[in-house]
Amino acid sequence: MTSDINRTGGPVERDIEQAITALKKGACLLKYGRRGKPKFCPFRLANDESVLIWFSGKEEKHLKLSHVNKIIPGQRTPIFQRYPWPEKEHQSFSLIYNDRSLDLICKDKDESELWFSGLKALISRGHQRKWRTESRSDGIPSEANSPRTYTRRSSPLNSPFGSADSLQKEGGDQLRLHTPYDSPPKNGLDKAFSDVILYAVPPKGFFPSGLC
Image 1 (tube, rainbow, N blue to C red):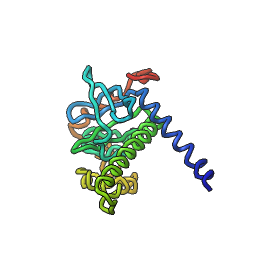
Image 2: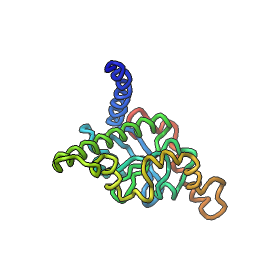
Image 3: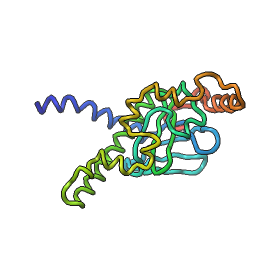
């Protein structure tokens, strides 16, 4: 029985570790910001696997994964909804932390799955370590200190975005409801949307094997 479990779980764990290794090498991702148009930035995972690092211009920025409440697929945040890009829905994801989000689009679905699975595993591990530490300090673990309850309680954005489970269940119908560009816009936003599409499409060869 044990050997069956090992055979089943082994490849999954290896896939996760391979994804994390790829994250350390880095990639060029399209980053949506609170101001201005989306822009390409080089992203990579720190060698200690605790920090996501990227460059915006010449400025190096960091996000501690311990501060991330959850990672959600698609383009569901208010930041994404400013310049929605339905064709890239399956290449997009957001890291939710404090009262903010880090919204990213990968070059293709494979790269998106790699980054999503790697980051999700690291964030989950961090939550489990934090829960175990709190449980030990509290003495006897209780239902209130379970990982699931703790995640919901610690996420100030639980209400706008819903739980991770509910987001998965909503699926494509919910995404279509949040996408105002099911048909070409007819107002002044048409040009703005066209501009961001032109700006966001990378030139040929823009995504090398390394960073930007």
